[in-house]
Length: 244
Length: 240
Image (cartoon, rainbow over the protein chains, first blue to last red):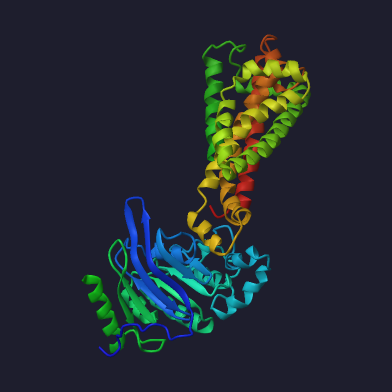
């Protein structure tokens, strides 16, 4: 399969943005992750797929330093989380929500305003989250993530709650946004198509306890045509790994 | 509007019962008699209402300060949660009719013991509601702001405190309802003014209608304070 390769090790001299080596994490009797090895190069977008409950969210929280591994080591550049539900503050306007990381750093919320125009949110600055559609809420949540000004983004199923059409639209939007504002990105998703459309690499995790069972490179440059044979081939390969 | 209709219906039934039921007006005066007494004694009632309202408002303010303060302390400190929370609960088992005379003996006939008693019974619902609301703040949002490198104080300021506001206001609404009971008890334990004092005097003087008029005023005061809080809630807590 020409488009699917084992991911090569990063070329020498490029320091990885995220490294997991031999990581295990347990919650009481439940082992969430075991023997997990993963390297993410700077600027790479790595999509992580796996069966429900395989420790995908745990993986992101480890990257963000919200949890510590029980065994092994996690080294990561400063990372920011975009949680599964958008976690927008219902009492704050869209602008205040996006500007939250700025205000925590003691800066003005006005710093967020230019991004609203650039990312298709102009005119929604004063709207409360409940007045926004699901797609718009995710845009605000993503701007907030960008404004945290961290080199690594940890996106936890950002579009899981959206309908299929909006989801496809938001995937294109995210793709464009990341080309404008490049970041190392870990994207956890249960949507295999999303993984192969957006990921430079797709990591497949095993059922719990999660470890890496496949590491597939998606060759075509982004933005990708989701119906192209190459993309469909990787999709089939990922699905095959998931079913194994 | 529907509340008004219900009130009118109940009053009509009451009027009818008092009129044809043959109940002595000294025991159950008709609403019209109560209204008459209220109008006749308006100066007396007003003077006493002002006193009671002052005690209630001061007591509620004190309860809010103490209630929010102890809620935040309990929220932030495990030690406070273990040490102070049981005391907060225990403070509510103190029987007010027993303690009130002691406080009067201690602090005198003035306003201080009344404010103290109102504050004592009112800080509890505010504390409990606020502690629970702080604890229920969205854990995802908490996690999120920690990845923005927020300090503990910033997590409180940007996530927990605004999230707890509706709960704190609900606690304050409960407090308003019981504040008046506290003030009346306190006044009956020893005072020379206030609606509680007036109630205590009106019954043996066979001024039952006046006593009922005082109760109506107490209810009106409670409704006014409750309405004020609802207004604040609607203005500042539009999201919930």
